[in-house]
Image (cartoon, rainbow, N blue to C red; front, side, top):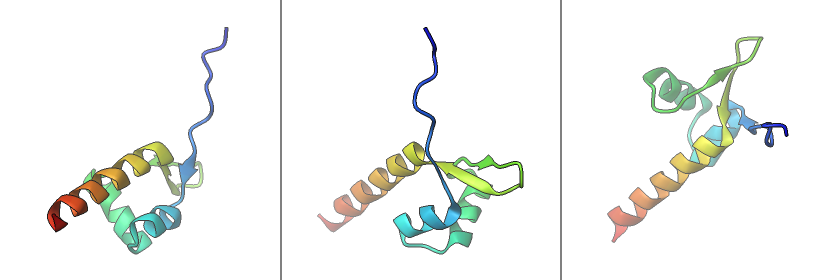
Length: 69
């Protein structure tokens, strides 16, 4: 039996930036600062795991909800 699940969906910096409503350069700074992990393509471009981005997005929205309460 194979241990291969569905391949992880990878997002570009622009896609991550759109989700967080920030500039793509901000996403790159987050990766350099270790706030989000990135994967490098063979061409040297950064890609981000959708599952991790969604988890961070959920945590960010929960923090925003708590601050508004």
